[in-house]
Length: 156
Image (cartoon, rainbow, N blue to C red; front, side, top):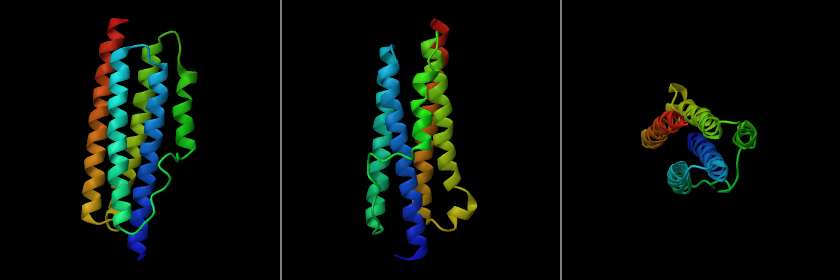
């Protein structure tokens, strides 16, 4: 595998990990949430990340690479998600949503890291557009999450 192709596979695999972390984080959030609207939204966020994982893995295979294990998480990032349970306080929904928004910022930051100029010179336009499109969708969901936080917390 040529060097730029190997680097592209590495980048795409790192984004598979980011989305796997996000999936497991929202599975944790679903267990913690008491609000049915939140559970539905978190489930939809999982669907988005599963779609991202499928797209990323398909592209990795197309490039001749091997996708990381679909249930593999980065460990450190996943620990942040698991700390979610520890951040729950008297205001369950506020703490839960604050934690999720914070983790969404980290997820989007990971995507941003791969969209910097140095990486765009290694990763082809096709992959840059795929990463940018996924990042846009995740950002849209983060904004939706922030709106939910304002709505749900104003009811408390």
